[in-house]
Image (tube, rainbow, N blue to C red; front, side, top):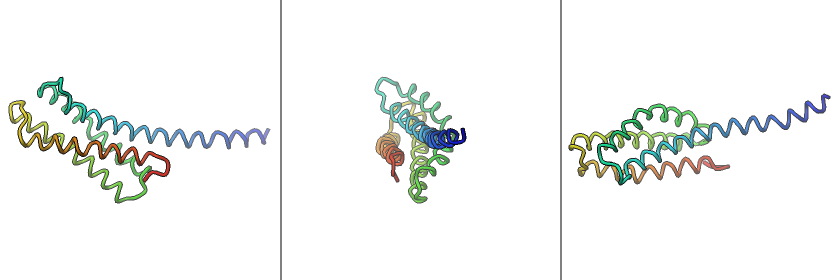
Length: 143
């Protein structure tokens, strides 16, 4: 009986640890999906600028939750404090750029301007980079 309990213990403890690790990874994947949603919204040719702003408004309301989730879970995958800080800073800049993009569009009667195009270029350049960094950190032996 004791032998069976010991065997069960050694079988299930790694599974519990793997399950916790998977839920942490799920949190970072949720942040990846959030970033992908931002990029899809700003690049969707089927949306008018007004519709795009409505979508971005809803994504902006979710930003603080994803920001907190990202900061908390990232530390569990990225051991280098400097890299962790850089990734958090990158997320902050992306979120700020999204807000600037929205306000530029609103202030220009729902038309793109030079300023909004600059923010659009920044978002299209940096969202894929951050998603790539997150994906690399989730790989076994990642960052």
